[in-house]
Image (cartoon, rainbow, N blue to C red):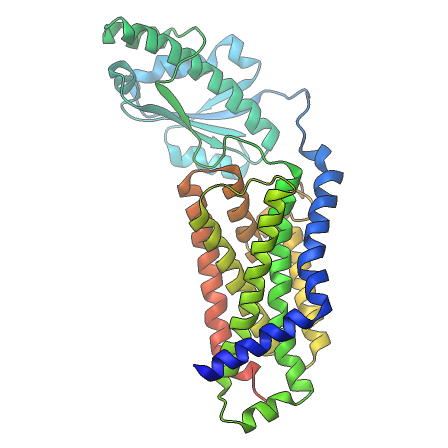
Length: 388
């Protein structure tokens, strides 16, 4: 343990003393967040625009709710929504995934019964791939449910549940709170340009920070420092652990500084789920350092490591929307296969205040990728730190 501790201490001192550490890992991400967040803020501001009726897939799993769901097919709603029925939720979700519809609505079983009795009741909303059309559909459907809420709460206050069910079917009014809208894949608030690029730049520069581990390994190969290290009673696994832990600590410190600075100076709200935020940072750091070790295992030149890692980072950042939030459906689908996508999505949904289930889903995928990279780096670790 003392040997590993010495190696970690040496790695920390090497990183802290390097002038590039401050400029590349701290100053540059904060500067880019400020520039991109202000220069591109107009792309994140909502403005009035004409939108054609949105094709909405509808699944009614409660026969007693047919009349209520039929309110989506009224002439008034037709200006905004074009409703298409589906026999089950699976077919509706398939059509949503294929882009055949722009939004999905499911009326669950026992909905009318729950409404009439005053129990918790909800329609399930499934957003499509177009953010503007999602907002319109959610607004229109939310307004309908607000009217249902108002009638239900008024009638239940009079103590007549049977009248409540009938009133829901002919809903009209303003506000209420008994019927809730649940959006399994969508948050209720938007992020600003500063918040969006804070998450994206944090991930990108954590990857650059992890690159330092690969550069350190290869640099010591080139200068034959590893030969001198192995002349002492030091094992390759100890060198590998020292490199990973030392650079991982630097990357984690970098994340802490960026998060604190953007919170206090830029006003970025990272949410109050600190355990999830910590997990997202740790998993991103583990993945970036592991990726650096993998790259270092296949080359003996620092410039090659740097070129490969920068290329990987730039491509993954681009596909995950790090340079532009609108990159097209095809590239967005490719982005889901990148480590950067799941890391940035974890941070973005924490900023949005999304449901725990949504955040945990992103963290689970991110953790799986990070674990896979760590396992591969462990298998290739001996090759990476070999002095031969």
